[in-house]
Image (tube, rainbow, N blue to C red; front, side):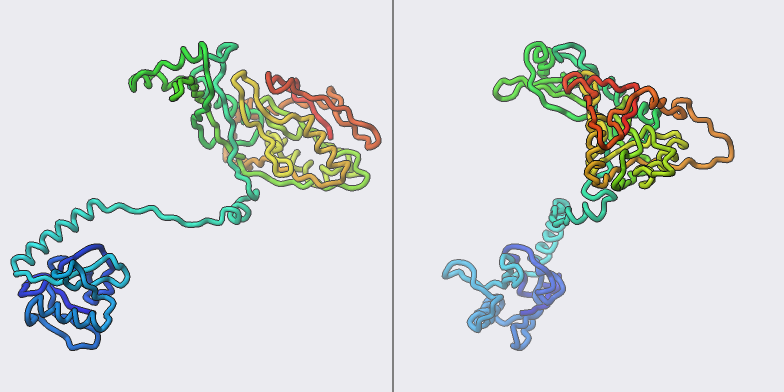
Length: 435
């Protein structure tokens, strides 16, 4: 069914929107019919075109619609109770949208058209964009898009606020925790670790508190009291059951490798009695290659065959440490500084044992090292701060190897940490662990 509509000069029949909204193209007039539109002509199927003025007005149009309804026209349906029933035109695409014909004077049509403009303007002011949903192939993207499949290059260090007493009821301020985070990063860079800053954020950690800690922190009674918590590292509140909950404000430091990570595969052969390199750990918790075998022309070690020795030389010439970031795709970087001041990281003894077992099993070792940016050549001399030029001293000749190089002898291992409770380390003097 089609009709033509005009916006003014009403002489008889007009459109009245019964309900809903619909698309314009299915109505044949180029626009969705709205209340107050004037009907100029009507075409039902293959019947002749009926033009205004319509004989009998609305009653005459109803007879035409009734005849079309009897013929099975799907878009014409009866509406209203018996005795007052009239026929309406229903949208095919949206059954909830329907319009009817009414008798209106020209003045009434103009008023309706004016109110329609107001309604459109009001609807426009209230219109909101709706959210959508799209499926995403995460597993595929994580394998194909990332330089290291299924692992990000974003690295982070969680710095807990320093406890000021043995009962951990008081902590240092947020500013102090931020300063500790920055000191850790700058010290790492000064020691030669090739990392760069990304971002820093506070991170809320929930814990149960009681006693002195509860009385000292659960004291907020109004919004105004929240101002006092801006620089506090610990504050508390009571839940619905009266349990005192503490919120510790830690600092999450985000950083990344200066130039990405480089994979190095160390292949093993029959007759390899050693890997040809030793590992140490910085005060900040980074494990790095501290020395390599240089005089192995007659019998090349795995480190020489894999190119690790050349990388070590390049790092040394660039005043950088050759930091091991992953072993078998597992991150080997420090991840947390505790409230007592200790740094949670991996120990060199367990890593040396793992690497030695690879050698005995003749299984290749895949490690990743942090890359550094090549220095830019400048026209004038560039003076670096002394802390950026000095590498940690090598004490290879002073420390006996933890794992002996003979394949027939047994290795003796000792843990270099004092447990998880104190986080005290014994290798801050950077000893070498040969593998």
